Length: 461
Image 1 (cartoon, helix red, strand yellow):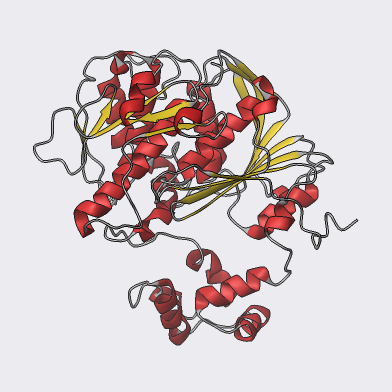
Image 2 (cartoon, helix red, strand yellow):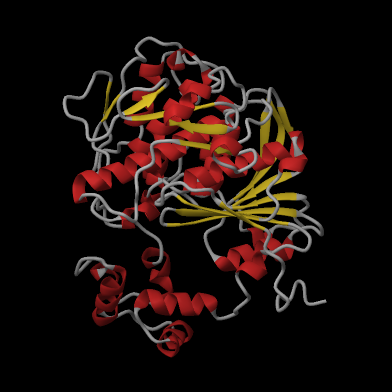
């Protein structure tokens, strides 16, 4: 039933998309029960059948120079480390969904496989991917009390409650967007648009603001990105435009391939803040139109946080009190230097020495010689090559999470759901702050009203 229904196909595709990007952690995917099944509306595969579409998706993640290759087979595995069942209860991890809910274990009996809204399917796949990751860690390193496995779980993207309190929410058969902007088209922002594009009847317009191009580390986390995008160094917005043209042709994106700080009077009243630095978050809030709603998403390891900036609640400067020296302090910590040493390196734009690079390698956990080719260059010139990149692939510790889509995908699902709710159910929007630790047994996500800080300059008066 799941293989022939839109919800089941969406769960499958998002789950395969996530797992196939976990190169070096997931070596091979085996998918059964999908051969010659027609791809349904709202399912982001570029072929007519599920098996052909999944093969094309996974194969597109492999570049000729890829150290790790993602593979998929449409036959049972002889000795799988993890078994996932999309549908009714069976051996292994069982996952299902309806319009807004992720349903694991016995809760799968409550599935609505024909629901139109994609938010439950996206959330179900995201939770299942996290559980697969935890099970692979256990297969390699043994059980860990800090990462208990989850078997029975219901979680709603509509009211953010769990178990019997997880709301089904209304199905959504069409969604017209206007005056919405995604600022920062990274892992979280692209995941939000990926989920929105699965919504049948999606129309209207959306603004996408991003100045950067793809780099190799993007391939692990960006659900729209292929190995070709990375190899060619394509602009991130070109990938977004191609994806929407294929899967959501009635949603018309307006592309702004420049930094947010350079836009002339940004007009949008609803903003997704999916940038990856505190300074960029401040800039979004400082330049937003008066009264704008801001949805901010962030991750740390297997923890993800979503915050909606509302009157009287914590804002982005409350969450990250303004510190003009924050970038310098972060850089000093990254290089293993004192603040004053880093300040001098920046101001004088010193020549980078082998000793400086050896200290950087030790601090970042890189092997000796990892940055050797940068010796002799100027300090400011090497920052973009030393401050963002790939993390060594390991399966014995959860430090791998920062370069995997484990936490960024649920952030994208919830942000997409918040955009939908702003149109179809404003009363159900996130009140202010939510955090969810996927490493823990999935107790109720933390939902809090966080009042503004009295010391915040935005609320001082």
